[in-house]
Length: 414
Image 1 (spheres, rainbow, N blue to C red):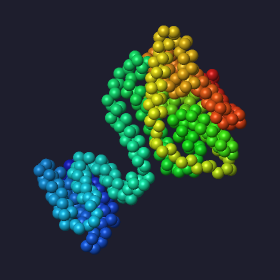
Image 2 (cartoon, helix red, strand yellow):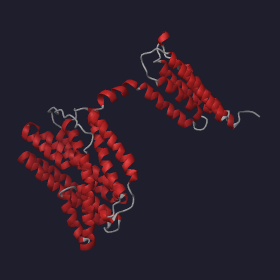
Image 3 (cartoon, rainbow, N blue to C red):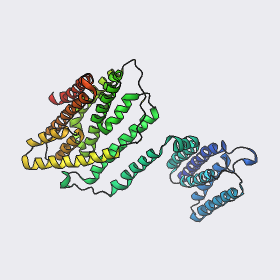
Image 4 (cartoon, rainbow, N blue to C red):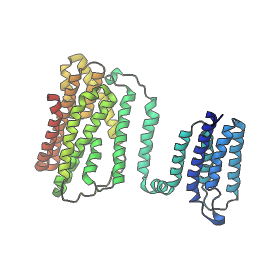
């Protein structure tokens, strides 16, 4: 017979992948092992041979042989580490060598995964300085604490919560409610990272956008206070106020996607029209020759009390609106949603989405409920703009908020 058998072809592919993995990781180690008697013990040839050894022993289909080969490699690393008199106590090269052997073993069954994992290992080794600098210089203790809180909320608390709808929450289930709180914390953390990475060059605009994910109304009030202190910042502060509404629209879309994804196509035209108007206005406001002032990022990656407060507000508003719908009819729901919108448009809209998911509201009513919540929330922002920044800041900001609100209503009225 001419040609190779399929089994031989597969084995050759596994060996090629293992060799490539060993060479990729080994080249990185070769560049760092130094020269002379003080050089490290493993370079490109050692890593390539370790990977091939893993593949060959696994291909022989004897588990004991794989174990013996692995123990031999560990013993060799141990002997070298014991004889080395370096002041560096790190064992990165030893772990990388053993990982390369395991990748060679795994290449027999899953060569594609082995190739991808080899790239990850080589990237981690190559990024040593950047990772050390990030861990010790760039990442603050507060940010590390926030990252651990976010990870615990998403990976520990969220899976433990029940996923059954609760009548006390107006049809919401605790797991989905907590998922919204985690989602908002993650959005704020992403904005914080963006602000840290990009620096303060984007100034008020980026700071306002990040702040809008926490509270657009509070951001508008803070910018108004800044205008009272420095009147020259009026134009940039107004643009920042309009930027914060972009975050409001993004949050509304994410709330819809989380609570009632089927309603997203109904609300999407209004949301897209609203965010388009906000982006145009903010871009026009930022088109200025003045230098954007520096804005240091906040100390915390996200506002935990704000996220938990939003979840509590959402639960209470949803339960209240559900109670009104059951005892006073659907017509009263619009009034309750509109009143809730003065406090928070997201919670009011979420309550309507929850009622729609349970069949208590029809599709058209959900769209109107969101628009009513946005309308009353915009009135709150306008009042805060006047109260915090004075007549000029309040008038210009309110005019833009009115145009954004009109853009939201247009698709629903056509």
